[in-house]
Length: 298
Image (cartoon, rainbow, N blue to C red):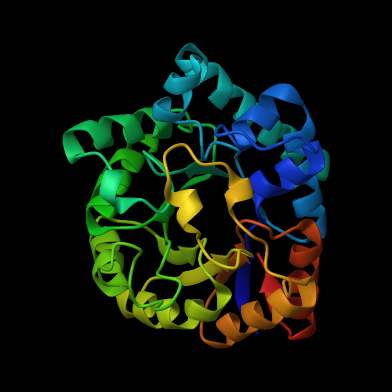
């Protein structure tokens, strides 16, 4: 019997599916602007399914995402909107913790275009400050290189909140970041910088066990939340991509994904959930399996 933190699922993709509109480069931010209340609805559904953490829809609210479409002046207002939607979901459900999502600069999965520390740290800090006194923790998400690790955690510290650091790993070798650098080295940097948990995220479920073996070496609580894409395609690695460049795998049922998650728990993971394409139905199945195995969801 183990205490397990159950994270929510893939907010961005769930929003895109429910909105029914063609995805844009602003991704979930666009849906939040166009359909007020939908973010809170999705978060409520994840919490009702068994999640104990609601992740704010702040992953893509970075200045470098807003500038190309002329809405940089809405930076603070969009973060306030994401916070309000998250707070509304927690209030409606009656319990849960709020996690500020700190996504990558430049683009996801692109260590080659991540800015240098003198540029990156102040930008990450500016986002993290939006969570100060309002969220319960910060999750640094889809971290893909050693430099990215150092910069994003340094920026996240300005929130004054506990920090989880989640690494996106190679779809063929989970012991390596998407940069090709060792997960173990990145995780140790994160541990030395004071994070309270290390995770693997937005990667294929099959490579998570290898990543967990590396994360466990830190001695910190560790876990994972994978995605449901066949792979990160070349099309998605181009400038200002949209998620329709990615393909959903056909075997990604709640039951199949829960099989993976329970194997991670058996491997020692105490923080689990889902990333892109993980729905409330997936989280509900995981919660059911965890309880059936005698674990306590906290």
